[in-house]
Each structure stands twice: as C-alpha cells, then as structure tokens.
View 1 (cartoon, protein in one colour):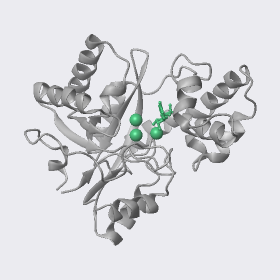
View 2 (view 1 turned 90 degrees about the vertical axis):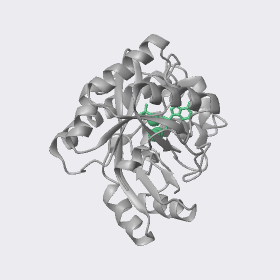
View 3 (view 1 turned 60 degrees about the vertical axis):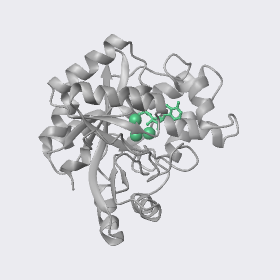
View 4 (view 1 turned 90 degrees about the horizontal axis):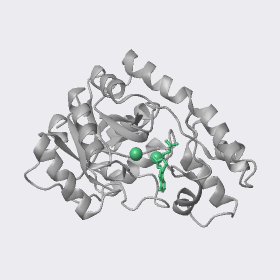
Length: 276
Ligand code: AMP
Ligand code: MN
Ligand code: MN
Ligand code: MN
C-alpha cells in the first residue's frame, strides 16, 4: 500500500490547492494520504471531497507549531475531527501570532537592506492568516535577490540569521492535548531536523509520550537513510507507532514527491493501522 501521511496545500505553505494536491497524490499511486497544513484545518473538506472522487483514502490532519526548549518542533495530528472546538480554538490561538511575527520579520529584513518583504510574502500566501517563512523565502527568490528557497533559509531565515524572529508557539502538552481531544493520533514530525542535544531529544520524547503522543515520523522526506534508522530505533525503544511521510510542499521545493516515500522497516507498527 502506498501511504503518505504529511503534506501541505495553499491553505498553509504548499504550492498546490488541496484538490490539486490530492490529484497529484492519486496520479502518483497513493492509496492513503493525509493533508497536514501548518496550524490550519481549512483545506480538509476540499481535500476529502477530491479524495472521494479519486477513490483514494484520506486522513484529515494538521501540523501544529510548538515551542520546546527554545526550538520550534512540529507535531502532526492524524485523524482529527476538524470541527472539534478545543482543536479549532487552539489552532486559532497559534495562528493569531503569525501576522505580528511576519511584520517583525519584515522589519528585521529591512535592517539588512531588504524592503517590502511583509507585503511581498503576504501577496504569495494563499491564506492571509498563514504567512510563514516559506512565503518570505519565495518572495526573495521571486524578486531575484536569491537563487533558491534553501539559500534564503540558510542566509536569512534559519534560527540565528538576520531575518529570524523568535516566536512562542503552542506548548507540547497543549498541542498533543488538542489533537487527542479531537480524536487524533499525535506524531513527532521529522525529528532529525531539530537542533536538540541528545538529552533534550530524550526529554522531547518523554514529555510527548507522557502527554499522550503515540507516533513518530521514521520515514520523512526530510530524513537521510541514517536518520531514518536512528528514529526507527527510537520507535522500537519507546514503543511508538511509525509514520511514513513526504512532507510534500511542491515540486519546486520538496526533495520527495507525494507518494514517493521509502518504506518503513517491516518490524515497526505503522501508524496507519489506526486508519485502515
Ligand atoms: P514557519 O512555520 O513560518 O516558521 O515556517 C516553517 C516552514 O518553513 C517549514 O514548514 C518549511 O516549509 C519551511 N522551511 C523551514 N526550514 C527550511 C529550509 N531550511 N529550507 C526550506 N524550507 C524550510
Ligand atoms: Mn511548511
Ligand atoms: Mn514541519
Ligand atoms: Mn510539514
């Protein structure tokens, strides 16, 4: 079965509408997919309807932004009820800080000579409530100042770079609680991407499990083979369900297309055993 449980649409920072994303998944042979826009549930109905038309399985999801020991962590929720009031209100509170953050990012970029970034980024965002760093990066590429999105992050937008503005997202416990309260399974997204010490990574998983988290992305478009093996071991040792996910944003930006994930090691328990 071709499974891909993490992807983005224009409702957050993906390049494709929810419908076009589902059609691409279908064309790529996906049997079961999840839409997991950042801090947003607004694409779920359109994606679910298109998945029904295409005849593929669909899991309603979300990727929640979390602050943990000064690093931003992403917690994916799979199988959430997009109408559940606690989740809806929680995500609303997470999104609420984004506009002010974007304005501060724009001011920070102005100090290094880049003008008009707020307006430029917002014009590229499909959802005005969800202006993020990817839109700033695309603005800098579109204006010819930078060659590609990766270079913009490395030079301006990663933590510690001139356009980076620290931001307080949800707490780990709140994010897992909202997901579980909405009937979903909480998943640590792309763990190898976090700049955490070994001790902090252990604390992340301890607090995640204590809060009711159940799964980890072992296969991710953001993981190397070695990183995949590292988190396969974490899944075994902590008894976590394993997820498999491209984290597809668009063919321009994503190393792995939707539906083109490597398989999970066969001894792991797939998180989609909950959804099939
Ligand atoms: P934000 O939630 O506004 O902080 O934006 C986070 C998003 O920025 C991620 O989901 C990715 O889409 C994108 N991103 C983060 N780091 C990088 C990077 N190094 N290269 C390309 N895109 C990145
Ligand atoms: Mn993104
Ligand atoms: Mn992420
Ligand atoms: Mn993602």
